[in-house]
Image 1 (cartoon, one colour):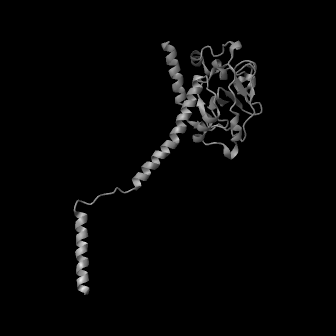
Image 2 (cartoon, rainbow, N blue to C red):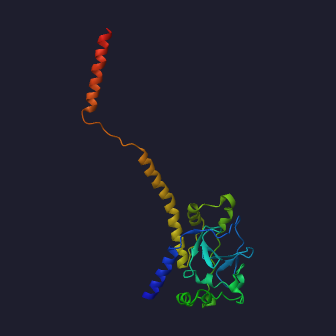
Image 3 (cartoon, helix red, strand yellow):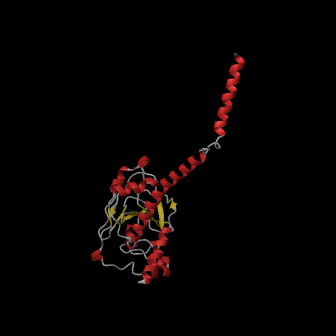
Length: 239
């Protein structure tokens, strides 16, 4: 039990540390066509020249020996380390990779990539059993967030707009621990960005204002009396 908790903690830390936004060379002007992979809770994009998938509420791209994830079809993308990529993403058969890397050559098209062979023994020990599952109890695919079709071109939302739109229009609750963690982090980033701007604006406005200072007690009254005497003397001279 303790060992399992340690592994889970390591996985979540791996996700949390990979929050940098990256560019991966995918620029979609329209929502892509996504088709279910038979027997898997995963979709793939048959018309794209990319290893582009959808699983459990997130889009997944495999490019340059790295997995990337996003809750929106055109990013921004976040790195998913090999230790945390969901097992059903790892299990996608080789034949559904539209741009398979060179080291996929010779591997069976109807079987998952040999990740243990590629990423090494340490990874295989951490992810033991990733390639063994009961095919009769595969979960149903998550619904596609097709509402995103209306957000294309100039209407594609900025990062701070994405989570509010997604939470309002996509009610699916992810099953995978890593995906749920990604959702929480995105919500935190989305909430933090406008709040920080607001705080900075308030501080800036406060620093521009000069503090109001009250004159010393009796000083203001003395000045008023002095001005009154000067005016009285001036009127007497003019008579």
